[in-house]
Image (cartoon, rainbow, N blue to C red; front, side):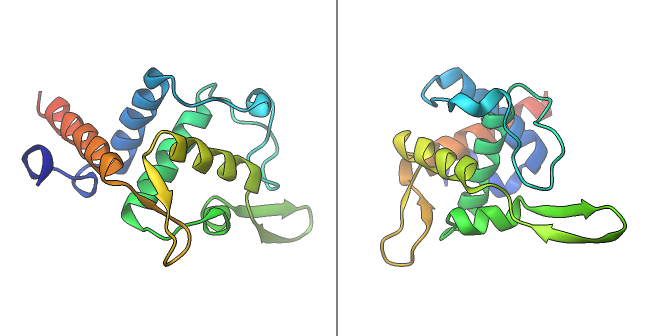
Amino acid sequence: MPFGGVTVKDVPSHEFIKALSEWLKKSGKIKLPDYVDYAKTAKHKELAPYDKDWYYVRAASVVRHIYLRRGVGVGALRKVYGGRKRRGTRPGRYVLAFASVHRHVLQQLEMMKLIEQDEENGGRRITSKGQKDLDQIAGQVITDKKK
């Protein structure tokens, strides 16, 4: 097992996503889209995200999701990040998140060689390099937590 047997499953999700988003930002390999400063992430949102690094957090969340459950594509990610749209006096309805954000995230993660397309089953899966990198970050989170 890599890095003393610590995997992404052994680390609390919030701490891991925070550490991974910092790692993605430091790497400088992700090219942000032009609309990152003013775009909403879904139809049910009223405003764009307040966090200026929201794109890195979303990318970290997506790669963790693919690590835990392979075969995920844009459609599945739209369902995961969708939510209830408030419609005034009418009952709320579930709406999907925007596809362009997730499609761009997946393309950037593929360029970093963290994920790859799964030809047999469809969707994306984690690469061996990606699994090694994510497990190393999980190990760092555990060691930082023990200090």
